Amino acid sequence: MNKSYRAVDKTSIVPLYHQVKEYLKNQIGSNVYKVDEMIPSERELSEQFEINRLTVRQAINELVQEGLLYRQRGVGTFVAMPKIEQPLTKLTNFSSDMHSRGLAPGAQVVSMEVIPASKPISMQLQIPEGEQVIELVRVRTANGEPLALERSYLVYELAHGLYEMNMENASLYQMLEDICGLKLVKALQTIEVSTARQDEAGILDIGQHDPVMLIERTTFTEGSNRPVEYVRSLYRGDRYKFSIEMKV
Image (cartoon, rainbow, N blue to C red; front, side):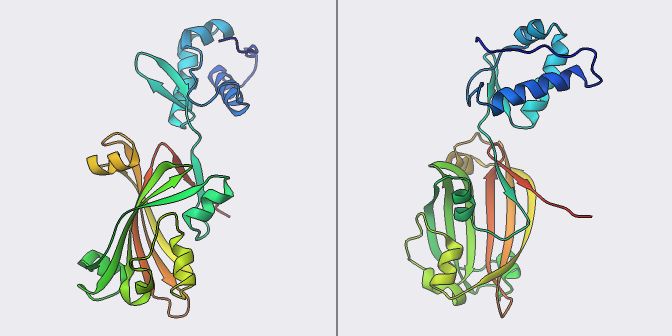
């Protein structure tokens, strides 16, 4: 690999590992090291910078933890595909989020049926247990790559106009507004770390027990301020991250 190097400043108060880390980040950001391309080994970098290999390893470890690099055992360290960042300050839909990033959103329907609401679902939707809901299971994609597995439960009384409609590559929230006349105004959402089951891993094209983010959200309509949708989504931990803006 004939990449250009610059020397680290050993007189600087900035730790050497951090200088190496920033160098690698700049190389990745400027596309010198491309996605899925192997970066120089710890030995090569330590010789180039004339520093200890443990210092280089610390820099690489942090970049792996941050998702900029990934390792293949016995092969080397590679540049990772950048994660998609999703702000949590506004209720948006997946399709709009992907369009804003220049990606082509998609939705592959796994199943769509009317079922009686279980107790947990009825509690989220504030309806009697056993009342009819539409269960819509879809794989959400960006440029054809699976990113999330969504299980949406919709109050049948409010969203029956969507049943048996073609939901492939469609925005659910847009269709709720256009077809069912429902304007969504707010949502309550929780996020926790989970792992993918075998069937879920196969759908998301990841390994079984790979980390995922489990997101549960209940979305409310304007006017009556009643829940219309409860959704459980599994987002790939290697391709997605969430950000929150906080003000003092």
